[in-house]
Length: 377
Image (cartoon, rainbow, N blue to C red; front, side, top):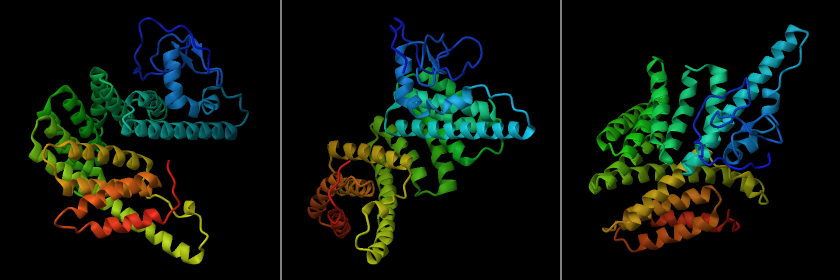
């Protein structure tokens, strides 16, 4: 990294998505005059040390060397075949950075690290614009990530601008996929909730749920996100009966999904153990969830558990179900120490209930957890 310079007295915000690739050097994050340069790639500039550090922590460390062949002028190629090959390689590199930057920003957002997500999301938007054009629907996911991250750090005017751009593109794209549309409504709902406009937030979240369920089903984890955010709105309005019902629905969806994942892992594990007793755990602990799904599950289930445990009127059955879901999640991610702790808590809670339907399932999960060597992430 370049040697830090004295920060400006007036701190610039991250959020200018336009990359200035010609003319005098410009800051990678805000477009201001570039005064610092990355010492590794020597092609990336920043206005001050704060923006250099923010970009490095978010995404630049991972793409620093990848930027060199993209931002370096190609040598004169003699043949048409060489020119075509060079263009194809450039496109592949750009698309790889788009995917990497987007997935990195998405993980940060799902983990609640909104500030860290912004530089990566800016890179995803910048390269998507270069590859697909400024009016392409391919830009919408990056705009939505930027909007959610900006909302998360309280920069609501910036979030509104990103969402307006995304909404304009969607409106101009008649064949826009339902997956993009429901995510747009979710982002609009989150922004309205952040502004305190709860009725408008519920309107957008209702559209989110309708569109997601029409494609993925009412009991899908894609739809559960809409339920969760809608529950949060009702919770803020102190409408606890509706909020609790929606939180229960969210828990049930994730519980069913995680139960199937655990069962699927068992099916993989059994035949391999029969073939070779010495099979390494790493060969059979393949998780069917994506990184983004894992991050979302942890964030959502922890939030619901916190609400259940803090509620004036306790619902031990609902709390036990959230604990069971979390224990399965930790088991699938091989965080066995947490899985055992949470699983035992769920087991002890269910034993105190008059109805103990889930006692056997939790007990079986604890057996699976205890059959593996102790490992903590």
